[in-house]
Image 1 (cartoon, rainbow, N blue to C red):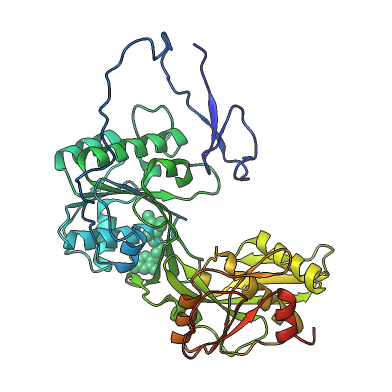
Image 2: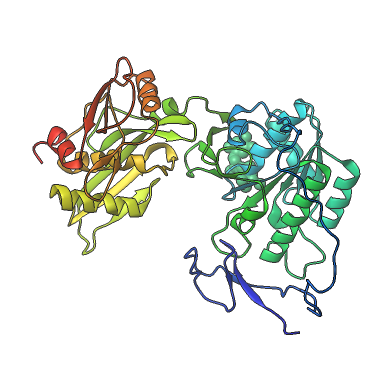
Length: 454
Ligand code: TYD
Ligand code: MG
């Protein structure tokens, strides 16, 4: 039998038959690595020829009720999990090294343990003394969490089968080593094997398993995206370095909504929950300045107000700079193009910087109008009124499209002291007391109303 060597992108998991410098799928450089050939076994006979056993089939309807969820008591975490941790499920928590994954999960383990779960925390990165010291500093030393420091997967699985815990935390999957896979720890093959074995344990024993995965850029070790399809829930823990805010974001959840976020703040004594993110994100806002606009967004089930900041300055480059933090660069280009084509406002020869204050990342298209407003405000050096929030999706024709949950956005704005809003025409909502809503049909109308001089 011919050996089937394959190459896999350690960033996104795309497979190739030959090596390449750049992954066509995710665009990352130098992330494609050779994977040890899978011993598929000789295909002597077609599978259909030799009889296997028949599998059990059952009706879709069942009398079983949904298993009770285990709540940690950390509300931000429970909400992102879809209302608590489901027994017999596997959760992957990905994030950049140093973002606070170990801190979050140690705090979660302690909370679950206080709620009566039998929790094991297996660290493949830190010695037990190190984890203990961290627990001490976080004020969790009294929690009934059992610690292990091990990387040999076989030994870990044997221990788990003997101890039968309710919850296992594995920190991290990249340090786990399966002795039946002939490649180095952290390689795609090893990481896949570890996740396969551990999710298998979760289903077999009814335990919840939380796996930590480092997001890696250099491709030396396999990132969490390689195994996203193998687990029930994928959470990413993100934040800007230099900011204390951390966002826990559900990107896949077989047991709940997938766009929910939890907001935390990194403090000297661990991660603190942020129950009212809008107030936090707007706390640093000074007097209304040109280029600053407050966007009324929705993150998961919650409205969140965010400040967008734009700076527009004459460029000395032949190709002016377009720099975005916290939003999609492609959407910025689109917004600039619509401003030019539909309103005749050109940004040629101008550097454009756009920033979402507080280190938050916006994924909603309903931020288009707020971005356009920030860009115009910066370019014309005209500040919008201080008590106004903006939202709306922009189409290529320059028309503004209504977005979902208008009323929730307005209520949140009203709660935080705003008195008016700019929204797309045709939005469906009932009036919110104290909020004055200006409905705009298209971008040109918006420009005329607020930047008449432009
Ligand atoms: P850590 O949880 O080790 O990150 P990860 O597991 O994702 O690699 O977090 C490390 C950072 O968090 C470290 O740079 C210091 C900071 N930190 C605090 O600010 N306060 C704390 O109480 C703790 C435990 C960590
Ligand atoms: Mg860690």
